Image (cartoon, rainbow, N blue to C red; front, side):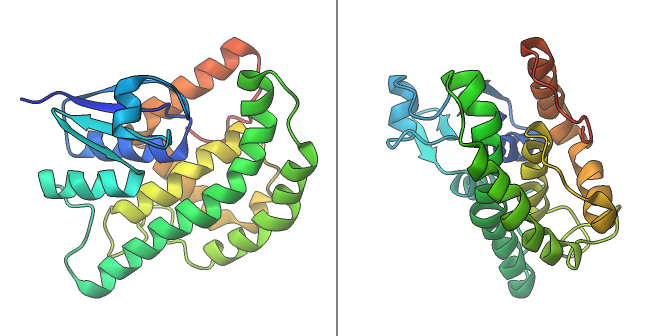
Length: 226
């Protein structure tokens, strides 16, 4: 069988999402850990603009987390992460977009400036940008999602696990890593649901390794998830 390689570090919510999907599909794969714009030629062939994740499956290459998961779905239809019903599929695509362009975009302002810049780039982050994201941008996002999230043991679309759940749950690990100050008493449904999702086997390994790395380098995290 063709070798499957996922390029990128699971600290990226996009990479974490793809790893979770590959685990659910029970693919035989390996992760080659590297960061954005890494010059590795095989990675850049898979992701020409240097964004993570990238995928190599034999001679086939692909970039973008959502595109990769759609490829996974066609390659191995079961267990399905994309519903066949038109309305349900539309909702899954919406939640994937909500996660990728709204929730992740906000969270990365905290994660990059508080974690990536000081730990990996060895330079101070823009803490004011992180504060604005935490105090001004994040609350309206969570206010919306609290009214949409299911019970702690539920799923976002159709009463079963889909790409929607993988996409939206993954960024909550980054909020935790960035020590985002969230009034969880105001968002009890989000807290219960996100904690359960990130403790599932398809996320737990990635989150645990990330937390272990942060302990090793002396970066304290809240430990709320995982």
